[in-house]
Image (tube, rainbow, N blue to C red; front, top):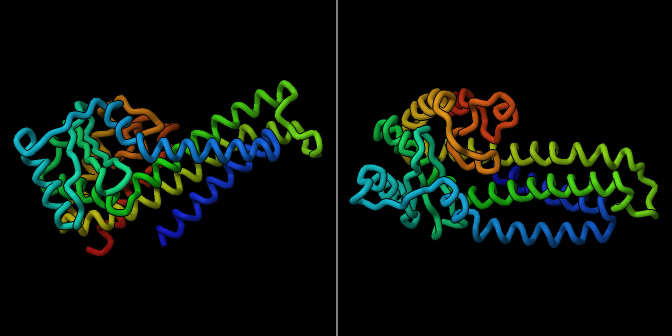
Length: 278
């Protein structure tokens, strides 16, 4: 059901992107928006993983430099039937983690120094299980594409606002009100954000469930989420809103407005779902 919901939301996001392009420049604008969307999705597919690892100064480790983390990733990836991903440590005190990569053969798991200090080995296994579930179900690519298209809609909307203000960008053969079109330009980024949030939240619930099964006990992940939620609100992290959806808990959760529009489901709901069957 989550897979169908994600597909529908991605299609809706792409169609909405094309509609914004048409609103700005008519049929020609929609064609340009389609080309733009294909180009940005291709860029996200090939380069988003490298960019985010570089952004957070992630350092690749192996069994000799990070034996506990590397051992957990290797054990759980073998259990999940996945190729061994690359393993990275992020030099940040906030306890958090994410996975990236366009497919299971080109995946990476990254954990902050803070999470390695905070969690027990069992709790860390719950977190790694969650991230490997994202890898297995290709959630990383889905989320990256959704974030890229949502950002492109915001960019197009800004272009459209200026075009309408200065009298351009509207098909003269159509009878649409410039004021209504301008209003829609302001609303479009919000709609795109809501669709992106729905996609991301759907994938988080699914990864929690399958990750808990992979780790062997739902309590491992639910206990980890409690600790991470508490710490993330008190320990700042130099994260950006564009990449916040990748982390297991929202790295920006200490800021009220960013929590309100978070791509992550409420921690309480995630814990309740994990422990509901116990």
